[in-house]
Image (tube, rainbow over the protein chains, first blue to last red):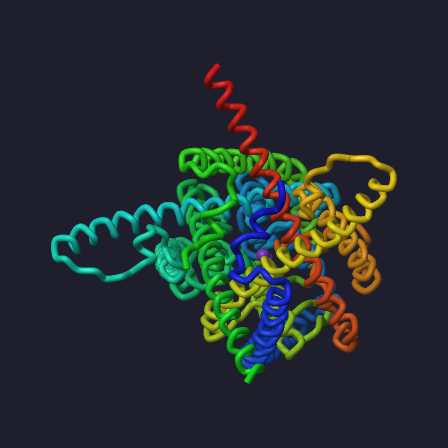
Length: 296
Length: 296
Ligand SMILES: [K+]
Ligand SMILES: [K+]
C-alpha cells in the first residue's frame, strides 16, 4: 500500500517546485521566529538569571563560612546531591519514583513524549530497553492522536450537519438562504475546528489548573503554565504534578491527573494540527502574493 | 476548505463503527503496553533507586556530622540550591543559560517540543509569553515535520522510480518480469519507507553519538541513548548536549549540535509516522481476525 496520506490532499498544489518553495519559506520563517523568540526570552530571563546567580553565590559563601567548609568540599557535596537527584532524591521527601504507579507515570511521559525528566532510567539495561520501548510506544501514541483527531472531526461533522439541518428547516419556514456552503456539505471548516479545539483546550486547561492549584500548592497562573507545558508535550519538568509524598495515598487524584493529561494532550495535539493547516494556507497565500509581485 | 486530510485515505474502511473499534482497540493495547512497561521499568530501576537512596542518606549523614550542621539547616541549604538550579546554577559551572545562544537553544527545545528543562522561564512574564509563543511555534514545527515527510516520500518515489526504470531496462534486455507492482507505480511502500527511515535514523544517531561522546565526555552508549531521547522529542534532560562551560566558545560544535538535532528529530518523526501506519494495518488485520472469530 502506497503512502497515500502524504501523496494526496494535504497540499492544494501538487507541483513539486511549489511544495519545495513552501517548505523552504516555512524553514526561513521558523528560523526568524526562533531568532525573535531567543532575543525576547534572553531579555526577559537574563536579569533574573544574574540575580539568582548573585543570590546563590552569597548563600553559598555564607554557608561555607558559617560551618567552615572549603568551597571544594561543599561543591563536591552538591555534585553528589546532583547525582542523587537524577536517581530521584529530593531535599524534601518526594514520593518513590520507581514503585509501580511511579513507573506507570514515567512510562506515560515516555509514550506521550512529554518526558518531564523527574525520573529517567539510571541503569544501562533501563536505558537500552527505553529505546526499543519508546520506538513502538511513541509510534502507537502518534497513531492514537491521529485517530482521536479523526474521531473528533467526524463527531464535529455530525454535530454541524445536525445544526445545519435544524437551521435549514427553520430557513425553509422563513424562506431564507444564508449561502454558507461549507455547512451544507456537513464538513467542518478549518477555522471552525480550530476555534472549537481552542475552546476545548482552554476549558480542559482551566479545569486542570484549578485541580492542580488546589492539590500542588501552585498559583493558578503557574498551574495554567504547567498545563500548557504538559499538554503541548514540551514537559520542562520545572513543575510536575503528583510528585509530593502526600500524593502517594490519594489514588483518585493520580487517576484524575492521568485522565486530565490524556485529554489535554489529545486536544492540544489536534489544535496544533489545525493551526498548522491554517499556517499552510497562509504560506500558500504568501507564495501567491510573492508570485504576483515577482511577475509585475 | 474542509479538513480533507482527516476525512480521506488515512483509514481503508470509512465506516464509523469500524473506526471507533480501531480507536478503542488501540487505546486498550496502549494501556496494556504501558502496564507492561511500568512493571518492567519498576523491576529494572527500583533496586537502583533504593541503592542511591542509601548512598545519599549516608553521604548526607556523614557531611552533617563532619561539619556539625543540623539536618534541617542542611536540607534548607539544599532546598535553596534546588531553587537556584531552576534558574540555571550548577555545582560545577555550566555555560550561561539566557545569553542569546542559550536562549536560542531554549527556543529550539520549545518549538520542537523536546523541552530538556535545563532552562525554563522563571519570570511570570516569561511563562505567559511562552504559552503564546509555543502555541504558534509548535504548530509551525508540526507543519515543518509534515512537509519534511512529504518531501522525503516524494524524493524516495523519484529514487525508486529511477531504480525501477533501470531494472525494467535490464529486464527488457533479459526478458524477465519480477512482478513487483508497487515499484511499477513509482510509489514507495510503507515497509520500504520504514526501513529507509530506520536506517537513516540509525545513521544520524551513530554519527551524532560519535560527536557527542567526543565532546561531552559521555560513553558511546550514553550518547546513543541521548540521541534517542532527544530525537523522539521526549527530552528527559538527564543528558543535555552543549551545556558545558568550555562549549561557550566552540561555535562550530553548537551549530553542528543544532543541525544534528534537527535532522534527527525530522527523521525520527517520519519514522514514528511510518511505524504508526504499520500499526494501523496491524490493528485492521486484528479486527478482521476478531470479526471472523466472532462470526464462527
Ligand atoms: K518533551
Ligand atoms: K521534556
